[in-house]
Length: 436
Image (cartoon, rainbow, N blue to C red; front, side, top):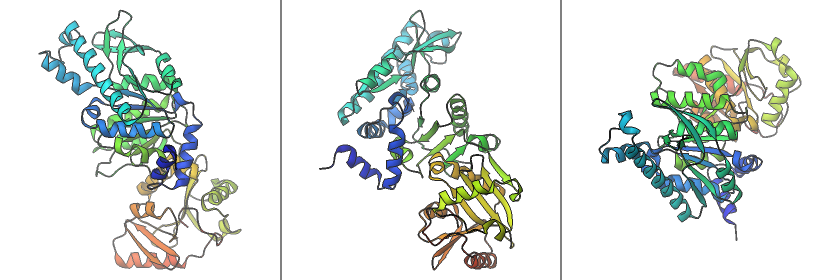
Protein backbone atom coordinates (compact mmCIF):
# COMPACT_ATOMS: atom_id res chain seq x y z
CA UNK A 1 0.00 0.00 0.00
CA UNK A 2 1.26 3.47 -0.88
CA UNK A 3 2.05 5.84 1.98
CA UNK A 4 0.17 9.14 2.26
CA UNK A 5 3.21 10.98 0.93
CA UNK A 6 3.50 8.63 -2.06
CA UNK A 7 -0.19 9.02 -2.84
CA UNK A 8 0.12 12.80 -2.81
CA UNK A 9 3.20 12.72 -5.03
CA UNK A 10 1.24 10.54 -7.45
CA UNK A 11 -1.61 13.05 -7.43
CA UNK A 12 0.82 15.92 -8.03
CA UNK A 13 2.22 14.02 -11.00
CA UNK A 14 -1.16 14.31 -12.72
CA UNK A 15 -0.55 18.00 -13.39
CA UNK A 16 3.24 17.94 -13.44
CA UNK A 17 5.65 15.20 -14.42
CA UNK A 18 6.91 12.95 -11.64
CA UNK A 19 10.41 14.20 -12.40
CA UNK A 20 9.31 17.81 -11.78
CA UNK A 21 7.56 16.94 -8.53
CA UNK A 22 10.54 14.98 -7.22
CA UNK A 23 12.88 17.81 -8.20
CA UNK A 24 10.94 20.35 -6.13
CA UNK A 25 10.49 18.00 -3.18
CA UNK A 26 14.26 17.45 -3.10
CA UNK A 27 14.89 21.20 -3.35
CA UNK A 28 12.50 21.96 -0.50
CA UNK A 29 13.79 19.06 1.63
CA UNK A 30 17.30 20.57 1.56
CA UNK A 31 16.05 23.76 3.19
CA UNK A 32 15.94 24.07 6.97
CA UNK A 33 12.30 23.58 7.99
CA UNK A 34 11.78 27.05 9.44
CA UNK A 35 13.25 28.51 6.24
CA UNK A 36 11.10 26.55 3.77
CA UNK A 37 8.30 29.08 3.35
CA UNK A 38 6.44 31.97 4.92
CA UNK A 39 2.85 32.08 3.71
CA UNK A 40 0.79 35.25 3.93
CA UNK A 41 -2.97 34.90 4.33
CA UNK A 42 -5.25 37.93 4.29
CA UNK A 43 -8.34 38.16 6.45
CA UNK A 44 -10.58 38.01 3.38
CA UNK A 45 -9.23 34.55 2.53
CA UNK A 46 -9.94 33.34 6.05
CA UNK A 47 -13.51 34.56 5.67
CA UNK A 48 -14.21 33.24 2.17
CA UNK A 49 -11.68 30.49 1.34
CA UNK A 50 -11.00 28.73 4.65
CA UNK A 51 -11.62 25.20 3.34
CA UNK A 52 -9.42 25.61 0.26
CA UNK A 53 -6.72 27.30 2.34
CA UNK A 54 -6.63 24.56 4.95
CA UNK A 55 -6.65 21.85 2.26
CA UNK A 56 -3.57 23.33 0.57
CA UNK A 57 -1.72 23.78 3.87
CA UNK A 58 -2.59 20.20 4.83
CA UNK A 59 -1.21 19.09 1.46
CA UNK A 60 2.17 20.58 2.36
CA UNK A 61 2.05 18.98 5.79
CA UNK A 62 1.39 15.55 4.26
CA UNK A 63 4.49 15.72 2.06
CA UNK A 64 6.62 16.65 5.05
CA UNK A 65 6.88 20.42 4.58
CA UNK A 66 6.21 22.92 7.36
CA UNK A 67 5.51 26.50 6.28
CA UNK A 68 5.16 29.40 8.69
CA UNK A 69 1.68 30.86 8.17
CA UNK A 70 0.94 34.52 8.95
CA UNK A 71 -2.61 35.79 8.73
CA UNK A 72 -4.48 39.04 9.04
CA UNK A 73 -8.08 39.71 10.02
CA UNK A 74 -8.87 43.10 8.48
CA UNK A 75 -12.50 42.56 7.35
CA UNK A 76 -13.37 40.66 10.53
CA UNK A 77 -11.95 43.41 12.73
CA UNK A 78 -13.84 46.07 10.77
CA UNK A 79 -17.06 44.09 11.28
CA UNK A 80 -16.32 43.62 14.99
CA UNK A 81 -15.66 47.32 15.51
CA UNK A 82 -18.82 48.26 13.63
CA UNK A 83 -20.79 45.84 15.79
CA UNK A 84 -19.32 47.55 18.86
CA UNK A 85 -20.32 50.92 17.36
CA UNK A 86 -16.70 52.00 16.99
CA UNK A 87 -15.33 53.82 13.96
CA UNK A 88 -12.18 52.04 12.62
CA UNK A 89 -11.15 55.26 10.85
CA UNK A 90 -11.13 57.19 14.14
CA UNK A 91 -7.71 56.58 15.73
CA UNK A 92 -8.88 57.56 19.19
CA UNK A 93 -11.69 55.02 19.02
CA UNK A 94 -9.53 52.42 17.24
CA UNK A 95 -6.89 52.54 19.99
CA UNK A 96 -9.32 52.58 22.91
CA UNK A 97 -9.28 49.66 25.38
CA UNK A 98 -12.70 48.59 24.13
CA UNK A 99 -11.52 48.51 20.51
CA UNK A 100 -8.30 46.68 21.38
CA UNK A 101 -10.31 44.01 23.14
CA UNK A 102 -12.30 43.54 19.91
CA UNK A 103 -9.07 43.24 17.93
CA UNK A 104 -7.62 40.69 20.37
CA UNK A 105 -10.83 38.63 20.39
CA UNK A 106 -11.17 38.63 16.60
CA UNK A 107 -7.56 37.61 16.01
CA UNK A 108 -7.81 34.79 18.54
CA UNK A 109 -11.05 33.54 16.96
CA UNK A 110 -9.77 33.66 13.37
CA UNK A 111 -6.48 32.03 14.33
CA UNK A 112 -8.27 29.14 16.03
CA UNK A 113 -10.68 28.74 13.12
CA UNK A 114 -7.76 28.04 10.80
CA UNK A 115 -5.91 25.81 13.27
CA UNK A 116 -9.06 23.81 14.07
CA UNK A 117 -9.77 23.29 10.39
CA UNK A 118 -6.21 22.07 9.83
CA UNK A 119 -6.51 19.67 12.76
CA UNK A 120 -9.79 18.28 11.38
CA UNK A 121 -7.97 17.46 8.14
CA UNK A 122 -5.14 15.68 9.91
CA UNK A 123 -2.52 18.44 9.90
CA UNK A 124 -0.94 19.60 13.13
CA UNK A 125 -1.24 23.34 13.61
CA UNK A 126 -0.19 25.46 16.57
CA UNK A 127 -1.96 28.78 17.24
CA UNK A 128 0.39 31.69 17.99
CA UNK A 129 -1.51 34.91 18.65
CA UNK A 130 1.15 36.89 20.50
CA UNK A 131 4.72 36.95 21.67
CA UNK A 132 6.36 37.13 18.24
CA UNK A 133 6.20 40.73 17.03
CA UNK A 134 7.46 43.56 19.26
CA UNK A 135 6.38 47.00 18.10
CA UNK A 136 6.40 50.70 18.90
CA UNK A 137 3.66 53.20 18.19
CA UNK A 138 4.37 56.57 16.61
CA UNK A 139 1.03 58.29 16.53
CA UNK A 140 -1.17 56.05 14.43
CA UNK A 141 1.77 54.22 12.82
CA UNK A 142 3.30 50.99 14.08
CA UNK A 143 6.98 50.17 13.77
CA UNK A 144 8.33 46.69 14.35
CA UNK A 145 11.35 46.69 16.62
CA UNK A 146 12.01 43.00 17.14
CA UNK A 147 10.80 39.54 16.09
CA UNK A 148 10.96 36.62 18.51
CA UNK A 149 11.08 33.19 16.88
CA UNK A 150 11.10 30.94 19.96
CA UNK A 151 7.46 29.92 19.56
CA UNK A 152 7.94 29.29 15.84
CA UNK A 153 10.99 27.10 16.33
CA UNK A 154 9.34 25.20 19.16
CA UNK A 155 6.32 24.46 16.95
CA UNK A 156 8.41 23.17 14.07
CA UNK A 157 10.59 21.00 16.32
CA UNK A 158 7.43 19.37 17.68
CA UNK A 159 6.09 18.76 14.17
CA UNK A 160 3.44 21.49 14.26
CA UNK A 161 2.73 24.13 11.63
CA UNK A 162 3.00 27.55 13.29
CA UNK A 163 -0.02 29.76 12.53
CA UNK A 164 0.74 33.36 13.49
CA UNK A 165 -1.62 36.28 13.89
CA UNK A 166 -0.18 39.56 12.56
CA UNK A 167 -0.57 41.05 16.00
CA UNK A 168 2.20 43.02 17.68
CA UNK A 169 2.72 44.18 21.24
CA UNK A 170 4.44 47.24 22.63
CA UNK A 171 6.81 47.15 25.61
CA UNK A 172 3.89 48.43 27.67
CA UNK A 173 1.68 45.53 26.65
CA UNK A 174 -0.60 47.33 24.18
CA UNK A 175 -1.56 45.19 21.20
CA UNK A 176 -1.07 46.51 17.68
CA UNK A 177 -2.75 45.30 14.51
CA UNK A 178 0.29 45.19 12.21
CA UNK A 179 -1.37 43.79 9.12
CA UNK A 180 0.05 40.69 7.37
CA UNK A 181 2.26 42.63 4.92
CA UNK A 182 4.35 44.20 7.69
CA UNK A 183 4.45 41.00 9.75
CA UNK A 184 5.51 38.84 6.81
CA UNK A 185 8.17 41.35 5.76
CA UNK A 186 9.74 41.41 9.21
CA UNK A 187 9.58 37.64 9.61
CA UNK A 188 11.08 37.02 6.16
CA UNK A 189 14.06 39.29 6.86
CA UNK A 190 14.81 37.25 9.96
CA UNK A 191 14.11 33.71 8.70
CA UNK A 192 15.45 34.26 5.15
CA UNK A 193 12.95 31.75 3.69
CA UNK A 194 13.37 29.90 0.42
CA UNK A 195 9.79 30.77 -0.55
CA UNK A 196 7.39 33.55 0.34
CA UNK A 197 3.84 32.78 -0.74
CA UNK A 198 1.28 35.56 -1.06
CA UNK A 199 -2.14 33.90 -1.24
CA UNK A 200 -5.15 35.68 -2.68
CA UNK A 201 -8.47 34.53 -4.10
CA UNK A 202 -7.73 36.05 -7.52
CA UNK A 203 -4.55 33.99 -7.90
CA UNK A 204 -1.52 35.26 -9.80
CA UNK A 205 -1.02 38.77 -11.14
CA UNK A 206 -2.48 39.79 -14.49
CA UNK A 207 -1.38 42.33 -17.06
CA UNK A 208 -3.51 45.19 -18.36
CA UNK A 209 -5.27 42.78 -20.76
CA UNK A 210 -6.23 40.36 -18.00
CA UNK A 211 -3.68 37.70 -18.98
CA UNK A 212 -1.75 35.87 -16.27
CA UNK A 213 1.84 37.02 -15.71
CA UNK A 214 3.51 33.68 -15.03
CA UNK A 215 6.95 35.00 -14.07
CA UNK A 216 8.53 38.31 -13.13
CA UNK A 217 12.27 38.84 -13.25
CA UNK A 218 12.61 42.00 -11.16
CA UNK A 219 16.00 42.85 -12.63
CA UNK A 220 14.39 43.04 -16.07
CA UNK A 221 10.68 43.60 -15.53
CA UNK A 222 10.15 45.77 -12.46
CA UNK A 223 10.57 49.26 -13.93
CA UNK A 224 8.75 48.51 -17.23
CA UNK A 225 5.80 47.01 -15.34
CA UNK A 226 5.51 49.94 -12.95
CA UNK A 227 5.51 52.28 -15.94
CA UNK A 228 2.48 50.58 -17.50
CA UNK A 229 -0.44 53.03 -17.25
CA UNK A 230 -3.06 50.27 -17.08
CA UNK A 231 -1.47 48.40 -14.17
CA UNK A 232 -4.14 47.58 -11.58
CA UNK A 233 -3.56 49.02 -8.08
CA UNK A 234 -3.67 45.54 -6.51
CA UNK A 235 -1.06 44.30 -8.98
CA UNK A 236 1.14 47.33 -8.33
CA UNK A 237 0.91 46.75 -4.57
CA UNK A 238 1.89 43.07 -4.85
CA UNK A 239 4.73 43.94 -7.24
CA UNK A 240 6.14 46.60 -4.90
CA UNK A 241 5.74 44.30 -1.89
CA UNK A 242 7.57 41.47 -3.68
CA UNK A 243 10.38 43.83 -4.67
CA UNK A 244 10.78 45.05 -1.08
CA UNK A 245 10.71 41.49 0.28
CA UNK A 246 13.31 40.08 -2.10
CA UNK A 247 15.74 42.99 -1.70
CA UNK A 248 16.75 41.64 1.71
CA UNK A 249 16.73 37.92 0.84
CA UNK A 250 19.21 35.59 -0.91
CA UNK A 251 18.98 35.30 -4.67
CA UNK A 252 17.70 31.75 -4.23
CA UNK A 253 14.54 33.09 -2.55
CA UNK A 254 11.37 33.81 -4.50
CA UNK A 255 7.82 35.07 -4.08
CA UNK A 256 4.88 33.04 -5.39
CA UNK A 257 1.52 34.76 -5.80
CA UNK A 258 -1.33 32.29 -6.27
CA UNK A 259 -4.70 31.15 -4.94
CA UNK A 260 -5.09 28.57 -2.15
CA UNK A 261 -6.55 25.89 -4.42
CA UNK A 262 -3.64 26.17 -6.87
CA UNK A 263 -0.83 26.36 -4.32
CA UNK A 264 0.45 22.81 -4.90
CA UNK A 265 0.59 23.32 -8.66
CA UNK A 266 2.48 26.58 -8.18
CA UNK A 267 5.08 25.04 -5.88
CA UNK A 268 5.66 21.68 -7.56
CA UNK A 269 5.60 22.28 -11.33
CA UNK A 270 7.71 24.30 -13.76
CA UNK A 271 4.58 25.74 -15.35
CA UNK A 272 3.17 26.83 -11.99
CA UNK A 273 -0.28 28.28 -11.52
CA UNK A 274 0.29 31.88 -10.50
CA UNK A 275 3.05 34.46 -10.64
CA UNK A 276 6.62 33.58 -9.66
CA UNK A 277 8.67 36.65 -8.71
CA UNK A 278 12.47 36.57 -8.38
CA UNK A 279 15.19 39.16 -8.06
CA UNK A 280 16.40 37.47 -11.21
CA UNK A 281 19.18 38.58 -13.46
CA UNK A 282 19.70 40.83 -16.43
CA UNK A 283 19.15 39.54 -19.92
CA UNK A 284 21.75 40.97 -22.27
CA UNK A 285 21.20 41.66 -25.96
CA UNK A 286 24.10 40.81 -28.26
CA UNK A 287 23.80 42.03 -31.88
CA UNK A 288 26.36 39.45 -33.00
CA UNK A 289 28.77 36.83 -31.66
CA UNK A 290 31.57 39.26 -30.88
CA UNK A 291 30.44 39.76 -27.27
CA UNK A 292 29.21 36.22 -26.71
CA UNK A 293 31.14 33.55 -24.80
CA UNK A 294 30.74 30.79 -27.42
CA UNK A 295 31.81 27.86 -25.21
CA UNK A 296 29.29 28.91 -22.54
CA UNK A 297 26.54 29.30 -25.13
CA UNK A 298 27.36 25.85 -26.50
CA UNK A 299 27.16 24.46 -22.95
CA UNK A 300 23.75 26.07 -22.53
CA UNK A 301 22.45 24.52 -25.77
CA UNK A 302 23.83 21.14 -24.75
CA UNK A 303 22.22 21.34 -21.31
CA UNK A 304 18.86 22.46 -22.70
CA UNK A 305 18.63 20.04 -25.65
CA UNK A 306 20.57 17.07 -24.34
CA UNK A 307 23.08 17.21 -27.19
CA UNK A 308 25.60 19.77 -28.45
CA UNK A 309 25.20 21.99 -31.49
CA UNK A 310 26.91 20.81 -34.67
CA UNK A 311 30.59 21.69 -34.96
CA UNK A 312 30.09 24.52 -37.44
CA UNK A 313 26.93 25.95 -35.84
CA UNK A 314 28.45 29.35 -35.10
CA UNK A 315 29.84 29.65 -38.64
CA UNK A 316 26.74 28.30 -40.39
CA UNK A 317 24.24 30.85 -39.10
CA UNK A 318 23.85 34.55 -39.81
CA UNK A 319 22.91 35.72 -36.34
CA UNK A 320 20.65 38.74 -35.96
CA UNK A 321 20.20 38.94 -32.18
CA UNK A 322 21.27 36.80 -29.26
CA UNK A 323 19.63 37.22 -25.86
CA UNK A 324 21.49 35.74 -22.90
CA UNK A 325 20.88 35.76 -19.17
CA UNK A 326 23.92 36.89 -17.21
CA UNK A 327 24.41 33.35 -15.90
CA UNK A 328 24.13 31.76 -19.39
CA UNK A 329 21.35 29.52 -18.07
CA UNK A 330 18.84 30.86 -20.59
CA UNK A 331 19.18 32.27 -24.07
CA UNK A 332 17.45 32.95 -27.36
CA UNK A 333 19.23 32.94 -30.73
CA UNK A 334 17.55 34.72 -33.66
CA UNK A 335 18.34 34.95 -37.36
CA UNK A 336 16.74 37.25 -39.92
CA UNK A 337 17.22 35.80 -43.39
CA UNK A 338 13.65 36.58 -44.49
CA UNK A 339 11.04 39.23 -43.86
CA UNK A 340 10.31 37.97 -40.32
CA UNK A 341 12.84 37.16 -37.56
CA UNK A 342 13.34 33.43 -36.91
CA UNK A 343 13.86 32.05 -33.40
CA UNK A 344 16.57 29.53 -34.16
CA UNK A 345 17.13 28.44 -30.55
CA UNK A 346 15.28 29.04 -27.30
CA UNK A 347 17.23 27.28 -24.58
CA UNK A 348 16.65 27.21 -20.83
CA UNK A 349 18.27 24.87 -18.33
CA UNK A 350 15.98 22.83 -16.07
CA UNK A 351 17.19 24.82 -13.05
CA UNK A 352 16.38 28.12 -14.76
CA UNK A 353 12.94 26.80 -15.78
CA UNK A 354 12.14 26.31 -12.12
CA UNK A 355 13.26 29.88 -11.39
CA UNK A 356 11.07 31.45 -14.07
CA UNK A 357 13.99 32.84 -16.09
CA UNK A 358 12.61 31.30 -19.28
CA UNK A 359 9.32 33.14 -18.81
CA UNK A 360 11.15 36.41 -18.27
CA UNK A 361 13.27 35.81 -21.36
CA UNK A 362 10.13 35.20 -23.39
CA UNK A 363 8.54 38.42 -22.13
CA UNK A 364 11.65 40.30 -23.24
CA UNK A 365 11.39 38.70 -26.68
CA UNK A 366 7.71 39.58 -26.92
CA UNK A 367 8.48 43.23 -26.15
CA UNK A 368 11.44 43.51 -28.53
CA UNK A 369 10.35 41.24 -31.40
CA UNK A 370 6.56 41.32 -31.84
CA UNK A 371 6.65 39.31 -35.12
CA UNK A 372 8.42 36.00 -34.81
CA UNK A 373 8.34 32.36 -35.92
CA UNK A 374 10.08 29.19 -34.76
CA UNK A 375 9.87 25.42 -34.86
CA UNK A 376 10.09 22.56 -32.39
CA UNK A 377 9.91 18.80 -32.70
CA UNK A 378 6.34 17.52 -32.39
CA UNK A 379 7.27 15.44 -29.32
CA UNK A 380 8.96 18.37 -27.58
CA UNK A 381 7.65 18.48 -23.97
CA UNK A 382 7.80 22.29 -24.06
CA UNK A 383 5.21 22.51 -26.88
CA UNK A 384 2.20 23.09 -24.57
CA UNK A 385 4.07 26.15 -23.27
CA UNK A 386 4.65 27.30 -26.87
CA UNK A 387 1.01 26.77 -27.83
CA UNK A 388 0.01 29.20 -25.08
CA UNK A 389 2.36 31.89 -26.40
CA UNK A 390 1.93 31.44 -30.14
CA UNK A 391 -0.81 32.97 -32.27
CA UNK A 392 -0.83 29.90 -34.51
CA UNK A 393 0.92 26.65 -35.36
CA UNK A 394 1.27 24.10 -38.14
CA UNK A 395 2.60 20.54 -37.90
CA UNK A 396 4.19 18.49 -40.66
CA UNK A 397 6.28 15.39 -40.17
CA UNK A 398 8.63 15.70 -37.17
CA UNK A 399 8.16 19.48 -36.81
CA UNK A 400 5.63 21.93 -35.46
CA UNK A 401 6.03 25.52 -36.65
CA UNK A 402 4.79 28.33 -34.39
CA UNK A 403 4.34 32.02 -35.08
CA UNK A 404 3.47 35.15 -33.15
CA UNK A 405 2.31 38.58 -34.36
CA UNK A 406 1.54 37.34 -37.92
CA UNK A 407 -1.93 37.66 -39.44
CA UNK A 408 -1.24 37.76 -43.18
CA UNK A 409 -1.66 34.26 -44.68
CA UNK A 410 1.04 34.56 -47.38
CA UNK A 411 3.52 35.72 -44.72
CA UNK A 412 2.55 32.82 -42.45
CA UNK A 413 2.89 30.35 -45.33
CA UNK A 414 6.33 31.73 -46.19
CA UNK A 415 7.45 31.39 -42.55
CA UNK A 416 6.20 27.79 -42.39
CA UNK A 417 8.11 26.78 -45.50
CA UNK A 418 11.27 28.54 -44.34
CA UNK A 419 11.09 26.89 -40.92
CA UNK A 420 10.54 23.41 -42.37
CA UNK A 421 13.46 23.90 -44.74
CA UNK A 422 15.91 24.76 -41.94
CA UNK A 423 18.68 22.18 -41.68
CA UNK A 424 18.95 20.55 -38.21
CA UNK A 425 21.79 21.95 -36.16
CA UNK A 426 21.62 19.40 -33.34
CA UNK A 427 22.07 15.65 -33.29
CA UNK A 428 19.30 13.11 -33.99
CA UNK A 429 18.40 12.41 -30.32
CA UNK A 430 15.03 13.63 -29.04
CA UNK A 431 15.00 17.15 -27.64
CA UNK A 432 14.74 17.81 -23.95
CA UNK A 433 12.98 21.08 -24.65
CA UNK A 434 13.38 24.38 -26.44
CA UNK A 435 12.93 25.77 -29.92
CA UNK A 436 15.15 24.09 -32.46
